[in-house]
Image (cartoon, rainbow, N blue to C red; front, top):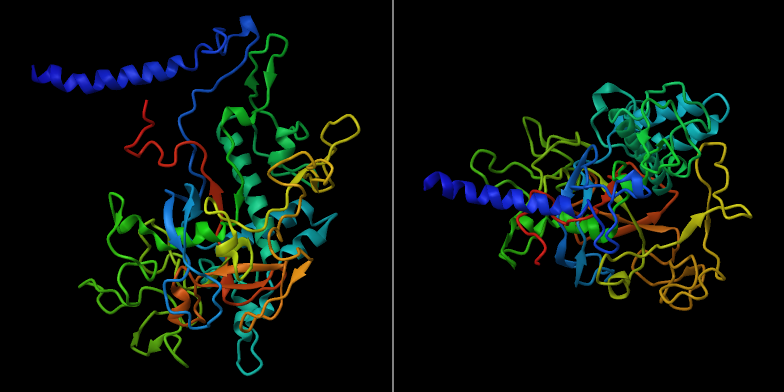
Length: 480
């Protein structure tokens, strides 16, 4: 009897798995078999869940109060609290380090240096951001990016545009590695100029690569094929997180929630209302890398309070309840959003974001995707107003200024030190080694022109989560 009772849950699980598999065997709409070349070969993949990309952590989404949790010391009144919902997504465990950026520069040099050296030059961080007219920071100018002592420190001196280019490059390298791992492509270290793996070009049939073992095509008229999006093998794009995503991940209320009750409202990425560790073993130790006061970047010799005069390695300090490091301190971080003082009033309360500019792939007269450019990328253009004229959800490509006054190319605001905010102003989240504790609060926000960079500003990448918001490890399933 005992053995029988233990088998019952397993039998139930097997039944569910069998039933799930049956969903991929035959169409419930037409009755035709799936994955059967005898009736045309339409394929349906028995997909389990999204693979977690390198460096990423799954952030289970939900509702939270976005905005100010600390006193508005700056008195900008640009982050009024508002309840929003964030979908599940992935976020880098750490800030992007110097090593990762040097890997990026090396690849650009190897592929483009001979014919297009400007591509690598465009990606070089501005190391002169370390200079201060009344301080001796030349060692950082010369050594911070490339010396191995700083290899695990966050990259700085990168602007918003460069960060987006890195995300695009990372997407292609990760997806190329997946195809190699699955035995579909061979390693090709001799890629040059436009002959380099690009995810969009691969999907569009404009990149072949060194094919090792193509997939069998169940279409009776075709023998083999490339990987398609419908196969679920390749990952979505790496990108910058939205402001709402970054703030949600930094706050990490998952550690303060019992059922649907948030027991303690957080001020920082960690629990409590102080910046020092309260645990016995580490009592008094700083929980982040920040500037404690005027002239105090790291404490007193012999008992340094955060052990970092400038930045610190990306795996420093205790991670928050999502397992993310340095969501408060070390370097502030770029996010996708265009800055507006009244963003929290204007933006939708589901997946909040301001900055949409809708694009589509360039096509020829016959409607086929145009040839890729000289760097191997599929060309994009903005959606025209004529194309969007019959749509109800948008009427033009550039929606940065939507419901923002009379929608000029720039808007003027009287917002403290910010007298001019335009469409190039991008939101910055979090505190840095150069900031006081005020900026460690997840709700704090600043902005900077997308082509500028500083010695206290870095970034981390995000990725969309497809399918279940909690994954196979979650306990909840859809109700039937």
